[in-house]
Image 1 (cartoon, rainbow, N blue to C red):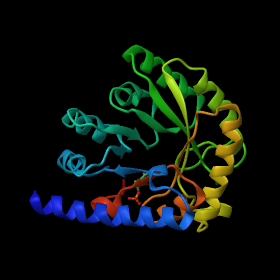
Image 2: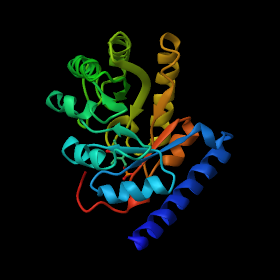
Image 3: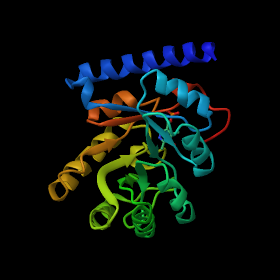
Image 4: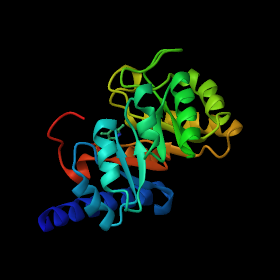
Length: 239
Ligand SMILES: *Cc1c(COP(=O)(O)O)cnc(C)c1O
């Protein structure tokens, strides 16, 4: 366990250095960027170590794994982010522990989140997940709404009890015009955020960038980066 702590501490320090360097390069303050550690596929014991090392935000993408992990870690001062595609039948469970759902991409999901948040007496932060490679009116293969669907969903979230519209999230597309162009993709997300904030000024979270492209996200103006592999190691399976 001590070895694992050393390993996580060293990885965390490297990621911290990368974020700091990216902030310096972009002329941004380090406090403008929040690190979210994506703990999917890793055990609750790792989450506990990370909390001890000062991590305050963790993310998960599968409710089956996340729910027991969050329960085991309920005593820790952590914010839990849900970043995976979310089925409506999992919403009640997710609302039980998630402070923020970053993968809001359809009206039915908003309705379900609102109902369960109200039932639980909780306020759930919502990010609209944007699929930059999705065609107009469509959704992305890995979830997310096409850019022209943001406004309608955002208005719906903003008008829903129990929900707080917090901003936008994206995953850099593997296909389409932004494939291999993370910086351009994240700049597009920033433009969409600027537009969104005209009608929803408080929705100022911009979640972008992972282990491989956090520098591009910070350069573009992201407020939150989601880092898994670079902190915890290469995942044993796709997740
Ligand atoms: C897994 C995952 C991450 C982290 O990816 P890494 O490459 O391991 O840093 C970030 N965002 C989402 C939505 C993920 O599913």
